[in-house]
Amino acid sequence: MNIIKTKLEELNRFWQNETLTAFVLNLGCCSFQCKIESLLGLRVVYNPIFADVLIVSGIINDKNKEVILNVYKQMASPKFVMSVGNCAFNGGVFEDSKGVIKGLKEILPVDVYILGCKDGFSNVSVAISELHNKVLGKDKNEF
Image (cartoon, rainbow, N blue to C red; front, side, top):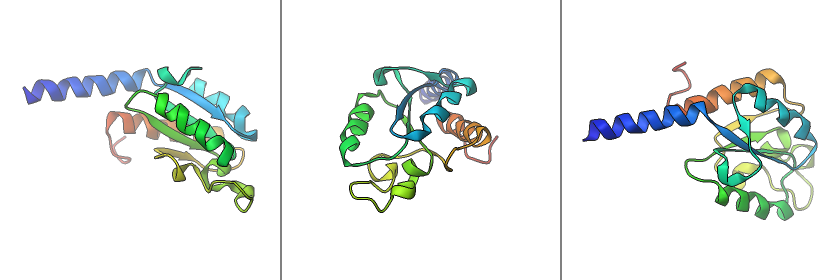
């Protein structure tokens, strides 16, 4: 019975990996960069209920913290979180400002980071590869 359960779990992970959907939450100036994710195997949806991946970019502050948490709670399990840009990683140039949260990791478990201001296409493709490996349950070095 465990063999059947294991094989079904593997099949479910493979199927989910092939059909990953993303909800993009643009909170700052990095929003135009997030449009390229749809070219790399992620389908963008506009309702968090149907999303597997939450992509957050921009500055996270006290006001939009509740919005992020609400979107995350609406997503079905298993769910993954991708942090895009320096602002979502550690507050960026605004990290010393009042009300700015020092990164998405302070409020949600982040699976994949894309660092840099104006993150490049190659960084995004590597991050999405890491995300696909995480869904399949592979280690980083198991390509």
